[in-house]
Image 1: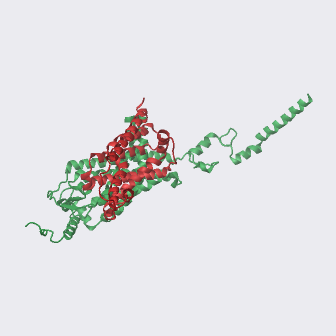
Image 2 (image 1 turned 45 degrees about the vertical axis):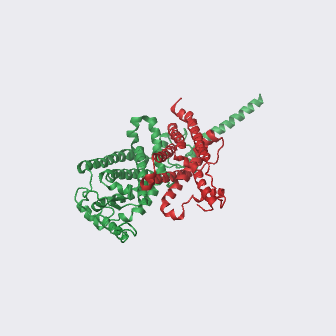
Image 3 (image 1 turned 30 degrees about the vertical axis):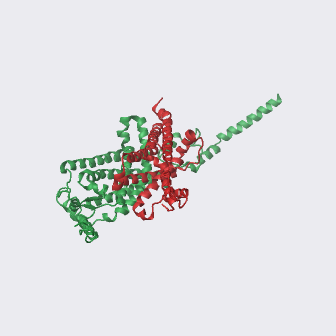
Length: 342
Length: 214
């Protein structure tokens, strides 16, 4: 009985000491100072305050730095989302439609730009096999990127209601993978293209005359070297937007290259803006380069153009090339070969 | 049975059987043609000539190199890229181990897959463009060449679109295109993957026997 009493007393003393330690003002103030119990019942901060700090984007110290960023909720992400899904998608979509509409309107009003003097049957070399290969390589990759990119940006508005969430999930995943895969090929193509076409696309004095005359898209004749002012502008637009697309695309594909999430958010917006701009203009380029201007496509498919086409669209260049052709023509080529029947 | 199950089950076995039996049929048929009897006195051994031709023709004769540099570059880009993707991509290694061979090997890392796939795509696009742009190539190309190129491109594309491995329908789409490719293979010029050895070897034997280097 005495043993029971002693044991009970010991337990009571130990429990009392433990309880007293937990509730002592010293212990509570120590916990408050260390802020070691946020959100707990006895912590120094209410749940509301804690979550308010989280929502404000405050950075917390993580027990393991390998866990990533200490910011749990990045508030700028909300603004980024509203810009990307609102402003960029809306006005970007309108921009692409304007590009399409302007091309259709031009086609309706101007019709096909024909070779005025008719075809001569004489061919003038315009693009080498290497130049054509580069063009079609970039064009093929660009089309794949444009389609997959448009699905990524507008798919949720256009495709999702039509095909449903399950199918859209597959399409969106495929578009993202395709986009990521073909992106680096575009970067390579862009650099090669810059070296292959850059020199001929430097602006020259003749371009000013071309601008004054409004090119020969609206009738009349405007002087031009290998590329006219419109083509040169398109080329440099491709280079500039392509550079933005390449840099931002690389950052998005390798997000660990930048520490701040903010850079990635900016990258997605710049990427979308540059892409929509170049897609809008590319619609016109594709039309004019294929069915809009008679004889233009042959330069990129066969490598040669009709002599009259060359004179009408790129007279300064044509003159130079034809002079070179005449110089390279073997002398006495018109004479009958030795031993030929007279 | 769902469409996905059909594609990944019976259709796969049918396609694989057509591919194996068809390819063997073609190769055995070519071998059975034999060689024309050459009554001339051999100046050199035929077999070393075949081996020599097999390797020497991997690069064009220096006289043609400048003219064919784009073709050679794009050709190696595509074929090496495709070979690496086909046999060293992690999903392919796993598939071959589980469904075909019963054993596997070390798969390449993801970044290497991306580089190889891009090389294969770049090469294929350039090769196909050359086929339609070069006047001679255009003349000697027929529907079979274009179908082979496009089927290969589509099979590669669907594979890359399914890269996330998060969607059964995308995987099934890739398998379906591969199955169509496998069925088409023995009846087309895609057979050059095997027959190039025979054709080069034959040329090498003929010239080797005559004591000249082809």
